[in-house]
Length: 495
Image (cartoon, rainbow, N blue to C red; front, top):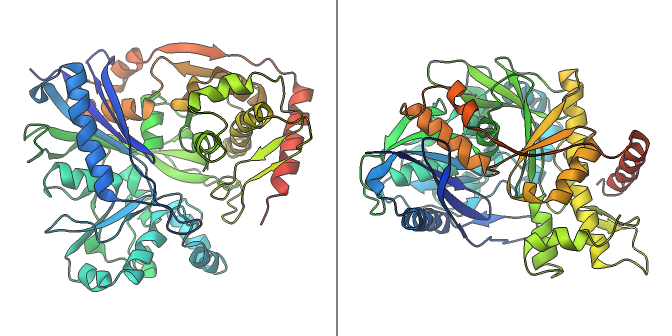
């Protein structure tokens, strides 16, 4: 009997596979990292075969860990790093070039040129996105223009393109399904936010043939079935797909308008459910599609993302070698009661919302002879929290009301010091669930709904469990003073 949901969380630095039972409990989980590729300063790539092998490897490992047979899997959900794109050959299934990662800034010059034209406002109105190298359109355009023979092969219909969900779906189904969901499609800068379909004017502007693109589908429902994998039997439905941040919003059961979450991963991302109508941001936030359930209207969200969050801690670990394990940052930062004036602006790949300074670079300032690595670690955690405050303030202005609480998830949300800083700097309660891998949970929920494993979102609300609340301990005046110092540091990295 099929009694589990398998969820693939394909992230920027690794892949996690989780298996959930009908009560929403995590039965087994494993993770596998894979190499990052940095061909030039500001360029970030992945080898798609490394991604695929990490997926197959973690599926196999997770089934073994849980002592679960493939035949016991009712359905598969996929959540993924969103704007990252791959182009591959339809016959051989082989990529024509490395995946260009969401963090990659190679198309900055192209985007800067677009920003100076009237097309920039048209793009924002149609897609809800600001023109930035972050999104997929200029990445696809770059591959078509710069990889030999690709443009002609694309026009001939020999190639397929997709975000990572689409690439994995293609591989899982043995080339049987070339599809994506509305949430991922809304991150490409090629989807019309209002029709939830590819926009002909945008395809023409960026020179992307429609034949290259996947079919856009709701986030829940059968996309295809497994074929020829070895690690899993044929015929298992892939029935839930959503971009990682939208999946986290769904996994946090933020089904009602006005509910919000922040995910702490490689970057940090705040999403606010705005209901059935898109809200156009006046403060440089993104309007995006949250999800769509079968036979229901599209649900929209406002989003603000900081490109570097957990990646800042990885940089302290690998680049500066301040500690050997990322989890050690909390103990190190806790050795001091403040950063003693040390500020770290983690603009290591530019600054995202609400600034959108693609050419900004990171900065550590305020150092004295008495500064130690503990102060740098503390400043890093403070920066991770402070950049989210900027996003939340913009979000509340767009919504025209103050949020009462924020749900948190992702790896760094396990850091109690960071979560307390977040509550203090935001001036609002922070709620952490028992299962902080809510990207994977959300994909599992969507997949389960897609095959009737769970019957309704009301059933999912009963499954969600609170682990801890962080209440505000910082008075208003010190909060205001701390934010003022942060904004002075931000101004110093402005390009």
